[in-house]
Each structure stands twice: as C-alpha cells, then as structure tokens.
Length: 103
Image (cartoon, rainbow, N blue to C red; front, side, top):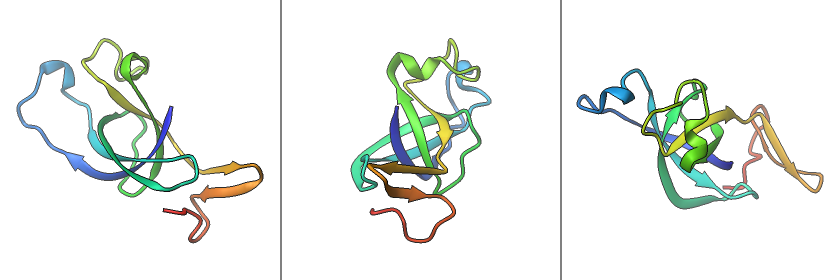
C-alpha cells in the first residue's frame, strides 16, 4: 500500500461496462515522511474519499481485491482514508491537526 492525496477527479462518459458505477480519483503519491512526489495515479475509490484527503492506495493485482473492484480492469484502488500516521514517534500526518503534513 502507498500513501497519496486526492488531488482531482476523472470523468469518463464512455468506458468499459465493468467500470460503470466506480468513482475515479486522481491521487498524488506522498512519501512516508509526508512529502508530495511528482507521481500521480488514477484510482478507483472504494472508500468514499474526498478532495484533499490523505489516503492509502494499492496498485497492480492488489487493486482488484476489494468488494467494489473484484474482477474489474482496475490497476489502482483507494482502500483507506488516513486519520493519522507517525514514524518513530513523530506525527507525520494528523487529519484533525493543523499543518502536520510536511508536503
């Protein structure tokens, strides 16, 4: 699993029928220390994530392991909305705290 921040939405009126009903979000990858990277992925949202939320996402075959993405042509899925994470006792991100992301 990887950390990311929801930075946008993807709308597609014409798509494979197996993608019908899925919300597609643009996720910018964040490193373990909370720094934004220049890597982006389009991910199916299995959790109801919102704009600006920090999430955990999986890619590859793991992306097809949720109830919403099983047997669908998905390469990335948001599988958790992050409340907090810390490394060696230091809080890197706290959803309810101010200015804790080092991005």
